[in-house]
Length: 223
Image (tube, rainbow, N blue to C red; front, side, top):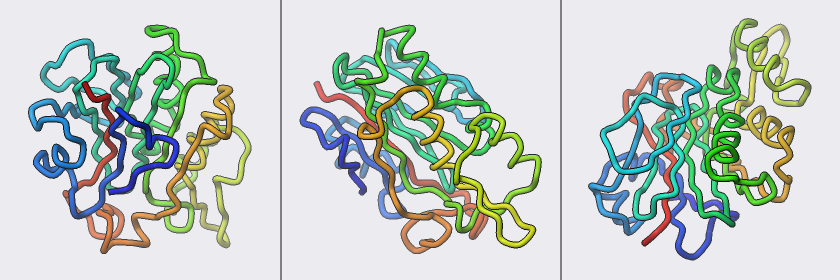
């Protein structure tokens, strides 16, 4: 379990898992203290849909979930994509975001922040964001269409790395840039330095092994 420093807050459960805990409800309940039946994970389809959870319900199709309800653990599944945890420390709103290249290109993190502002009057100064382990720029070789799509959403930055004629993209850094461009203070951001492809013994990586298994990012406010 990885607890981001900026979300190590009393009354808040916020962490990223690796191979050991994965997305199994038992270990997640043990780590968070929130009952197994209170784990909410959306049906992820690489969309830019942000679902506002007002009461526990069956999983909706979305790649980001936001809630003000206490006692629910939100989660997203990943195996190279970026798991992002979001917390409004003043209004006690939590969010979990799954950002692959499509979600990044569609600005899903920004849409999550906008949803929090529109629905709960969140302010960017109060929003803390943690970016979990994901495939990094050292290993994520992509084609020009992907590079162009993410660059169009993100603008300039050092999240694109060229090695000869091959382009590599760092999705975590791209999402960080997008958060900063929306006015989230740099001191409110935390980022894991670990690459899922470089560490296949610690994390599941689809690029590395085509695995169907997943780890995740999880966040919830205790009762």
